[in-house]
Image: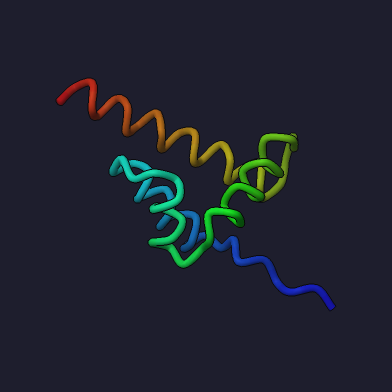
Length: 75
């Protein structure tokens, strides 16, 4: 039987919060209790999808990146 996916709303939010603060993907993932390898797998699955939880995760992280860039620009 396959293990349940660690990608929960809470984990997604914690990673996104780290990204929006300007943390690297590795640090943001680690701060949420996820390895950078797992984070990259989720991002790659999302990038190569057109729907589903990984696609939504990918879009969320991209949005948080944009938010962080905007905040730096306006600082």
